[in-house]
Amino acid sequence: MADRVGTADEAMAAVLADELLHVDGEPAGWALLGWGDHRHVWLAPSGTVYKVGLDGANRYEVNRLAELRRQGKKFAPSATLWTCEWTDGYGDERRSTVVAMPYLPEDGSVPRDDPRRQMIAVAGSDFNASNCHANGGQLWLIDAGGL
Image (cartoon, rainbow, N blue to C red; front, side, top):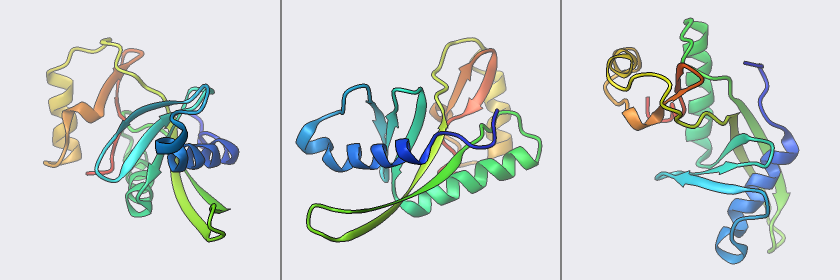
């Protein structure tokens, strides 16, 4: 996978989509894939996933995925941390970090049981099996925020 994922423009569009979600709904071409305690996950029209929310969680996830890749773990996708700055509707300067990563939806191409147990052993006890997707014949860790 490429080292840099997504674009600064799309990261900013994800932030703005997140800010306006309760007012305008999903922007055309974008899809809200899900959310957790600290972040929303957006799918851009380009097919890139953007995670908008708690800066600490975003920084941690990108660093954790990079460390897993350095260790040779093929299940850790490339991810890029984008910093977005803007002025909100009240004239306040805002800054947020956004994770960009490939969209890797579950496609059922890898059996569910044994390989995921191996990932749990590698990732640690706080591993959530729903954060692991089979895609294109390989297992991928799609959320390393809790590891």
